[in-house]
Image (spheres, rainbow over the protein chains, first blue to last red):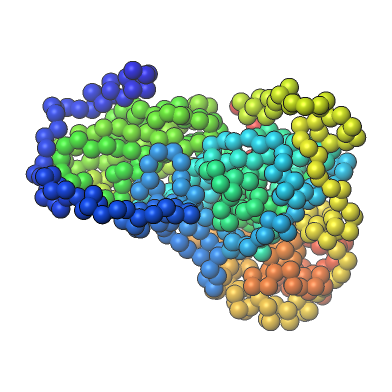
Amino acid sequence: MNESKRRFIKRSAGLLTSGLVVGGARRVAAGEPPEIPPSMKVPGAGMGEYGSPAKYESKVTRTFIRSQPGTTGSGASRAPLESLEGMITPSGLHFERHHSGVPDIDPAQHRLLIHGMVKRPLVFTLDALLRYPMISRIHFLECSGNSQLLYQPAPPNLTAGQTHGLVSCSEWTGVPLRVLLEEAGVDRSAPWILAEGADSAAMSRSIPMAKAMDDAILALFQNGERLRPENGYPVRLFLPGWEGNMSVKWLRRLKVVPAPIMTKDETSRYSDLQADGKSLMFTYPMEVKSVITRPSHGMTLSGPGLHQIAGIAWSGNGSIKKVEVSTDGGRSWVEAPLAAPVLPRALTRFRLPWRWDGAAAVLKSRAIDDAGAVQPEREKFIAEHGNNALFHFNGIQAWSVAASGEVKHVYA
Amino acid sequence: MSTRDFAALPLALIIGGCVGAGATAGTPEGPNLGREATPAQIAGWDISVGPDGVGLPPGKGTAAAGAVVYEQKCQACHGARGAGQPNDRLVGGLGTLASKTPVKTIGSYWPYATTVFDYVRRAMPYIQPQSLTDDEVYALTAYLLNLNGIIGDGDEMNAQTLPKVKMPNQANFIVVYPPRAK
């Protein structure tokens, strides 16, 4: 038995206060024994070129899709976290945030230009990029506006995906940016790189050279296949752990520069207004955070007895070291087992068995990363940052469970 | 961890031939397939403008000229005289940032005037970006700065004057990267 399993059983034993689970009333359905199910009586469907989810899962979609007035593509959609398990987000459910819609880019026509403070400005085709040595990394991507509605004074009447679904996790494969910068003869003393997309917002951010030379990836593949259009096809920048919009999609240009360009999306947007009227600028890493995805707002527990609490935790500053769960609103905490693998800057799944006694409860999760950062209570976070920062909310999420089993978003 | 991983790209594992043999430039870690970009290619693509004014093109404009362009191409989304609705408000809001209901506009919030030029030229109007002439972008920039009371009615914006414009909220931005050592 491995260590995590031992821990799991030990922790579970601590939470299980009574004996074995008692089976509920049996539902009678077609296909139940002794009936032979219909699927065994006719041959099944044929093979397909590109698979889709089961038709019975058609309600599992991106959610809370919102655009700027008068546009269809300037906005965001969220991953339905409450319907997902494990650590990987299916590519088709990965959240979206576009500043002017999803461009249609023919890879044969696309070019990447590297210029500025380099010895040799260079242009790359996609065919060329595909010949470079590649690496694969599993990392989360989180929009810095994720959980923004929790800045509001009243708890939003929304699901886990609707409030926290601007985070997703994929395996990203591509070329280390450092290799291409070195090919161009980058001036390593230059402190910044302007990254620009080929969308109609020409989305642009200034990236510190240190990050570019450390773990930045020119991503070409997501979860084994070429990037989806909404995730930057045919090539995007990927900056592990940092706020999502810096990982510029549809990347077409990198300019090595002596100082930040101060683009709209690093000054007027994606800066964090504090209660005293000052603003924090260049708040790059996404702080340690977690959310219980099951049970969560909109669900109803089917009755007292054993339930599984499951959720995700992540930190832009490293690996998740520990997740603690409370069922009494934060008075007491129990460590939840983490599902392997626990990777730096990746979603980490935690699961904990919970014997619900049928009384009202308040569920919370609290993540701690290997840098020692602890996810703060919402109240403490708001006291420090005010209600208007818009970005980088990482306070603790609370769900109330009523005696009826109904689960709702609360501030507690 | 990440740095070590990248440093560990397996030069030693390349099979067949001598690494970098015959290469005159570039990196031993890749096939060196970048083609040298010409000055004309770079000039055509380099649209970014820094706060020091580097990247600003020739051209000029005033608030009066900008008002004409604004009414034709911007007002439908941003309201008369930048008042907002259906999309972002661009004018006013000074003194509201520390209140419960801050109004973030170019005048009350944006720290650099060059960002107005950079952003309008690259991304506006929303339905027809990169369609404005440089003179139109200078004129719109002048108009929006003038509506916010930051420059005078007759002030011309060009590559020399725009970087000199001081935005009222600039001192209220706190740069947090690189993080201070703990």
